[in-house]
Length: 111
Image (cartoon, rainbow, N blue to C red; front, side, top):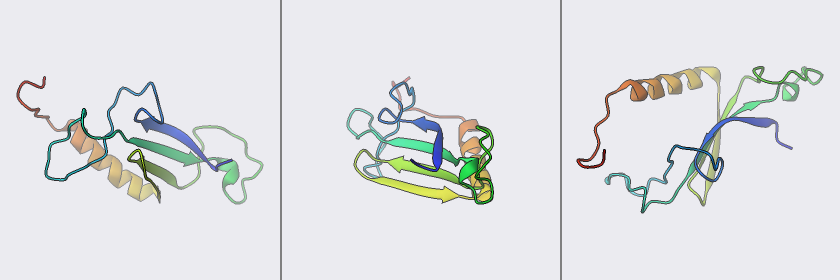
């Protein structure tokens, strides 16, 4: 049993109901091609509170969590997992929020 609980995921292997597309980046100099590039997955996990030293008897479920967030990335073959402290998560969220808020351009004829 893992000390981590998945809070969110994207990609078809981890979440068959996912509507988002996650692809393995095959080439940094090419525009992504969903029909040619292999699928990937991304997941965010929190640590169960009873897995934090000194809190073994606390069985509160979400939203209580430990002080680390785990970020998992899979390219369909290999898997990488990193843990981030709260400040690193804040910095990542700010970058993701800026990207989400930016106007998007798409290849002509794609939309």
